[in-house]
Amino acid sequence: MYVAAKGGEKAIANAHRFLAEKRRGDTRIPEIGVEQIREQLGLAVDRVMAEGSLYDRDLAALAVKQAQGDLVEAAFLLRAYRTTLPRFSPSPVLDTAKMRPLRRISAAFKDLPGGQVLGPTYDYTHRLLDFSLMEAQSMAPNVVHFMDKISSLPSRMPRLSEILASQALIETPEPEDNNDLDVPDITRDRLEFLACRSSRLQSLARGDEGFLLGLAYSAQRGFGFQGHPFVGEIRMGYVALEVELPGENLRIRIGSILVTECIMLSRSFGTQLDRQYGFVQGYGLVFGANERKAMAMALVDRALRSRELGEDVRYPAQDEEYVLRHCDNVESSGFVQHLKLPHYVDFQAELVQVRHFREERSVCHEERVSSPA
Image 1 (spheres, rainbow, N blue to C red):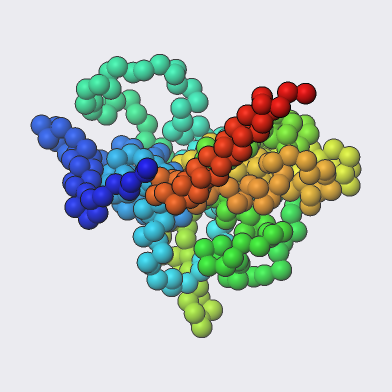
Image 2: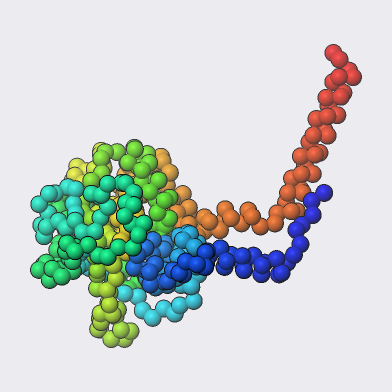
């Protein structure tokens, strides 16, 4: 006999108090502030903004604090808040060529026009614990603040894809049949398959980093497309955000946002595009400083273009419905965690069935024993 646990509202209220106590931790230690999270856990905040589909560093930091550092839960909180916000106006397409970059690198060309900027990166650090960080530290005296020198950069640095396209060495995806202000919105419209590229990129941009990273890895190992991909360009920095006033032929700048963009180059062996151009591209763009996610997104985007490029579609990373239906960690988390909810009736039904089968097998066994051949 299985009996449902009882307690109702009282038990839930107590669970909430217990959660608040665990979130606060040892009260002898000062409580961490949202500002500290925003400034000192910036990469976690950026990931929550990207997967929560809302650019607001303060709210993302608050979500991280409320979720005790659980970034999937924090993205869920931010996504839920996002649904309560009014929508004023869509923004025109960002011109990332005008980005004020904090970082810009290419693995394809050493002498990238406009120059390469290493910026803040873990690429050249030793993966060793730095025990000096156990204590609070002041800023190192020899830090060069890049933002102080940013005015010396050109106002527009063309993307590598533009340079290669001018030499007919890379294909450019066909623009969709809509204007800048009429793109599909996957947060309002049902996602249909085959999805247009705008919908696909929106889904990937707020997809779970770990899921996309695994798919990107599989694609690199040959379960997505052939050949070695190349990082054409990664740039991370601030891009001006504009809106177009309704009824007015006027665009105004309302601020800037930090984004990371990646263009991945690869071949499409045996196809018409490969013979005509040589390289095709995958594209990634995410909120904040999130280089790994942008690279993974670009690789998965390239794999998902297999059908469009005339390649065989055989692997999960190439399957649009598989990728887009499962990359959202809010949906995935909800469906997996719903298993914690009471399933007493379902389980009882399965239990009755299992006992019935066992009784049938027992009767058959007794009949065989009592009637030997």
